[in-house]
Image (cartoon, rainbow, N blue to C red; front, side, top):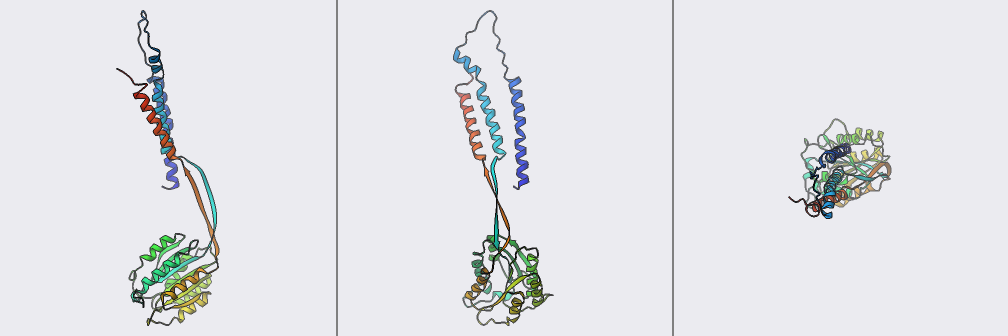
Length: 314
């Protein structure tokens, strides 16, 4: 329930209190006057105990009405001590840009596919990214934003875990992958904006070349860390990736093993951290439970008085 819904719900429940008071007044004014006809000739002697019971019989019903009032307050969701704390965050804006072309299904020396190995390494990398905002872009012959920039590392990890090849038409559009990552970073206020590009092949698709995308990245003050993942004999010329990284002030990596891949991603964690915003924490103390307990106790007291001391006899 959002803040507006919670507000209107509270107002609706509290709006019942005047109605309850009105019914209580009507009950007291016109419902409790009991006329007892007594002969003017004879005098009826009533025991003192019985007189006291009759005189205070209204108490059980009053406690019942009080229980109802407290129950309405409980349903309104009483809150107290709302506090707001602002914490300045330091970190990076990082977009993980991942190649999902069919060649990522090829096995590496460990027997896992390159994609599975990449997923494991990226998950390890994400474990140390608390305080950084992470986004995810995947590409084949076109590019797709999978996750916007977010502090929710668990949500990003879940996106990484479900990656599969074949989501898009096959191909390797590195330039488009970079361009889509820059869309995520367009409104970033971070001084340190980074694209971590992972691919296992040369650009062969897309309307923008990798170097054109790199020049645009440089203009937007965004560094590219380009990783060529080529385990075993699966080799390609990574020179273009090296130039992409150099143009933007980043760094290129040739990763032949899982350890090389982990080293490449770990390098990003050593980048200079910068102020990227403020996160507000709202602390709300809820007091619904005590009111529920009080209402229940009053209801029980009213019931016990009605069936014991103030019990009506035929």
